[in-house]
Length: 307
Image (cartoon, rainbow, N blue to C red):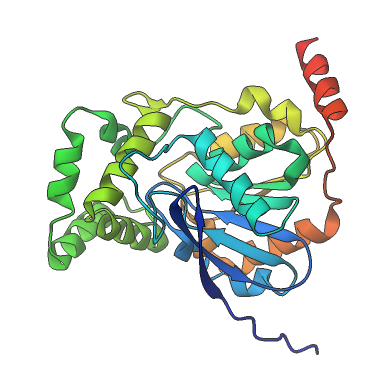
C-alpha cells in the first residue's frame, strides 16, 4: 500500500495594486487548482481538503479582497467581475498561465465569471453549491439588502460567544435540516464580521449579488460557453442556503457536465464530507483533459449561441 506523503499548507501574502492579498498554498506538482471561498468566508474553509488535493495538484486558496487576512479597503471593488480580475492578476503574478477553478457559493459565481472573462486561463470548472445558477437564496442573505441591515449586522456581531452559541442552537432547533458544518461556518462568519472593514466589504459584495427577492446575478445564460471546458457540479441535497436543485438543473442543461450530489450534506459539502469531496475533485482532474480555449473557440461559441 502506498503511503501518502505529508503535504505542508503554507500561508503567503502578495501585494497587488497596493493591496495585500493572502493565500494558502500546498503541493508542488500536477495541475494548478484554485479554491475560491464564499460570501463572508475565507480560505480556511478549504483546510480539510487541501492536503488531499495537494497530493495530486498545486493548490492555491486565496482570501478574496475584503475577506480573511486580505486587505479590506473602503474604496475596494467588491463586484464578481472585480474578483475574477483579481484572480487573473494573482495567477499571473504567481507565474501560472491557467488553472482549474473550484468555487463555492459566491466563489462559484466568481469562477464562472473568471471563465467568461479569461477563457484562455480556464482549464476546468468545479462549482460547489454555487451561486449564480438560480434566483432562490436563504432569506437571511436577502435581508442584508434591506436598508438598515448593516446596523443590525453590527449589533449581531457584537454579541458575546455565549450569545452566539445560544443563537445557533435556536437556529438548529428551528431548522433541523441545517448541518453542523453550516452552523460552524455561520459562527465563523459572524465572528469575522465583527470587524468594521470586513462588515462593510461584506455588505458591498452582498448588495452587488443579491436583492430582497433573491440572487440578482444569473450565469445560466452563458453556460453554453463552457462547451469545451470540463465542468463538475457538487451540491449537498440538504442545502438550506442555495437549493441543490440549481446545480441539478444546470447539470441537466449542460450535456457534457458531471454532477456529485452529497446526500445529507448542507451548503458546505467539502466540510460535511471532506474525503468524498477530495476524491471527487481528484477523480475529475484525472479523468478530464484541460481546456485550451482560443479567441476562435469563443467566437464560434458566441455565434452558435446566437443562432
